[in-house]
Amino acid sequence: MVNVNIEKLLKKEKRSKYWLCQKMNITSRNLNRIIRGETTSISFKYIEEFCLYLNCTPGELFTIETPSQ
Image (cartoon, rainbow, N blue to C red; front, side, top):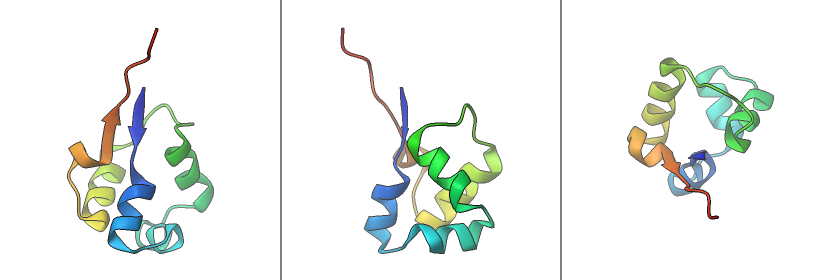
């Protein structure tokens, strides 16, 4: 499972989800869907903007959780 670390990175930068939505021109509903993993894809445009505004790399933005059996 791929996890998106947006909330963790926002906290590190001392920013809010509202601020990020305003900067990226994205709705809070869509941002929350991305955060909760309810989307099947994220465009490169959004990945680039997340990294730009959250001052991170794609490796910091995403982590992979292996399922335990």
